[in-house]
Image (tube, rainbow, N blue to C red; front, side, top):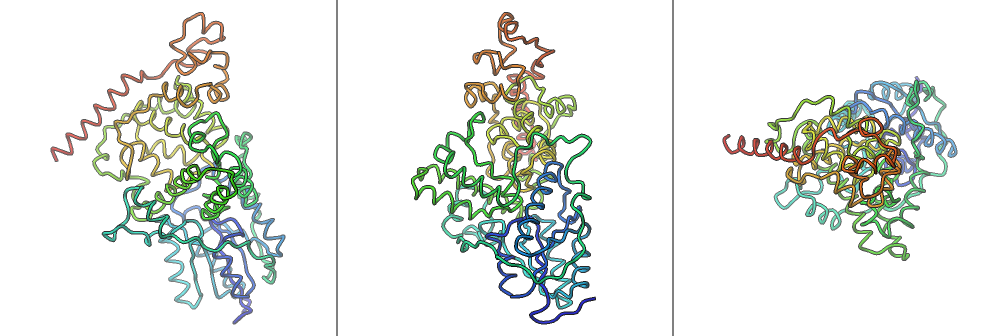
Length: 486
């Protein structure tokens, strides 16, 4: 055991979903101590409450490699450990004589409780533990409504957030972090985060890491932001930020995003209204995180309890067709194929495919949430749960269940030139726009000219949307009667 005291004892900087050096509160406070810093990332398969999905593992692998390089440029070694978080921290403390652990808090219920237990245990033994907010604009619990409770409606939440939350000063990150002892570290290749046998990630066109996040933010602020209110609904156009994965892994702070967007307005790159629209989406992310912190059951239970009695169907064939992009509805299939190929799906299409699973197939929203958790590079417990419940009508400030997206008209409205569908469903590329979003309605000669044999080259619809809509509304009435009778 190495024993050090006072200013010579190192500080353990525990990285989690704050994989950046700039605008990192835990790093900033650690450097202010003047002590040597030991950066560590612990892959705790159980401690965060839910194992990572496959696409998230892919992103984490690349992000950790980028962080390791950034730290090495500053003279610091990123220590990688796998196992129980408290056990690994204790081993590091014993080996180095560290008397402090600094971290940016995780606000999901299981991780929050785990972190509190670790801090309490270590503090009782004389180890300083300090936690900071490095992922949200406002710490959950600090933004409450007039009655002293959490907000359950987005608009007043967002107004309160914008009025009261204070952006921290921008920081670049320490230039030099040398002084910590060399320590044993896991080889990230041994963690097996990158897929193999087969490698299904070849279509992932992302650049994880702080540099990639900064580049994506700058490109968005100087380009698509200027017409964001339109582009956010057009999946065939490059009109969105593609920042969700970077935000989830903390490669960029949300306040950094807001500052960049506001700066773009000041510099004449975008109108104020477009910036406000995008900042509201950052606010929705914040709203979801605060809701999960206050209502820890929402990943697995309906926020509105009456929806727990909803008469979901058991249709494994339909579910598999949905996951494979073989439903017979082109905008749905395009979205699911984009998800599988790239680990991401355009936001408008996420709503369409979720509505189809829940209301056309009448399958439990939790099945869709689980599939997204495994296949999205930006899978986030709060946002994923909240957004699925929003579509299902069971969440806080949710879209009403009786709002059933028509996959045909949604495709015609938001992909009018068929650019999106033709990219992800190339078997339909020769079909004229008039028939593209409902191929089964095309005359036989049109299908022949396009080289399409329904049921072979492209599936027939697995469900009739009109009939499915009536079935969904009947199910809604059933739970409404049940609630009234109770």
